Length: 102
Length: 102
DNA sequence: ACTGTATATCGAGATATCTCGATTTATGGA
DNA sequence: TCCATAAATCGAGATATCTCGATATACAGT
Image (cartoon, rainbow over all chains, first blue to last red; front, side, top):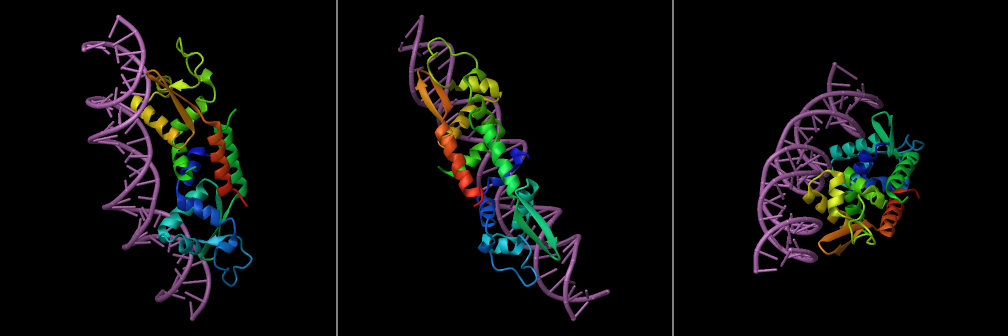
């Protein structure tokens, strides 16, 4: 749990927005045939919604993954990203521990 | 409550450290004669502890004030800063509202 | 093996943040 | 009024972040 990097990862409105979107799979288009039972969302769907370049979104997802806010799973040519609720909560716990009194 | 700016303000280890220090007045030297009953800590004390330049710390305190994490009170030539617990908690509430599921 | 699609990585220009020293402003005391 | 001290503001160089297009890699189907 690297607070420094975690805060940095959240210090960007699009990355925060992506984390919000990932709360609910239905924020994205339906899964392609064969992907129905896979958790997570592929990069292309996220990119389409965020309207930033593919490389930017891939980079963003890498950052979010690095600090543990999301996990990725590769299936064929697709990488599926989903939130890691436990780590997100751990971040809040650490943050509050540092910043809230006492 | 501007989340964007608030996160930005926290995206710096020294500023977070200052907020931690301000939890407890005893992290700083004793108040000067005449200041004993004033809440908060003057910029010079914070600067001394943070070991950064006067202008940097003044700037930092300005940022923290702008997002409401601290309030300032002027007494003579001194500006005393102290935490605004209510706003800090409001920040966490907003943050959790945006980032925690559901 | 070849082609096409999805993602990751690289390199770079534009923009923002960090931090400083110098200067300015505000205040208090002699 | 003049000087000293505390804090705020200004201007700038160094460093980091943002975001892109181009390229590389991984995989699937023909």
